[in-house]
Image (cartoon, rainbow, N blue to C red; front, top):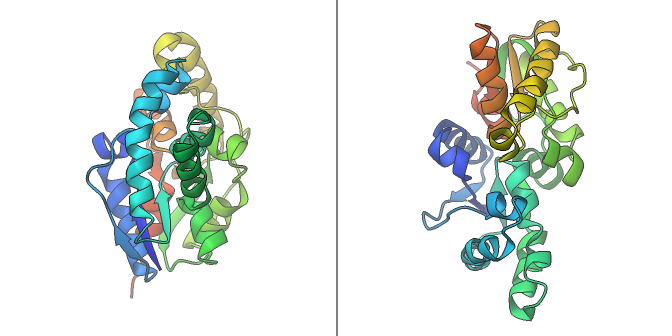
Length: 245
């Protein structure tokens, strides 16, 4: 199997280790990985702010790139439920253009968030990873509510050797980031993050895992300001650590 990986803006600019972890993990699972350096933003910030013409301009470039990628690969995989959600809205964004809408539907059917791809497409739960410690999990909003993905990340975490998994109180509650929401309403955003971090601290976890870098940035920032020793890990980082021999 061959996949093209979509490295999102936040991963590219702030969390490159997540992209590397995803590529290494997929390679370890005998998936051939390609990466097209021409990829840019999916258009989500503009779209969510109501600037649909601007979002459409950015999205068209990505749509055509992905359509070309799928001529030689089987799937596109991304470490973000948020960005996958946006791309799956492309048929709506290009509803008035028959050619682009057809391309968008084609891409939509072959685009997956990482955990969903591993469990539902590759059919694996135990990816041969190891992590010693107590781990909890935060459901990112787009992954849970838009894509309906909840069980795959938990299955993957529970299969990691050495992990003690504990469910997080209010795991499905937003961390408060919300993209531009955190910029427009910083006080509300910080208050929501404080409640999320209080739940994480009550779990007595050594690390909190999520599938979106945006959530990890929000939660990690609040944990850092509180002087907490709890780590934030993207699921790809947790799974990329192979079992020690």
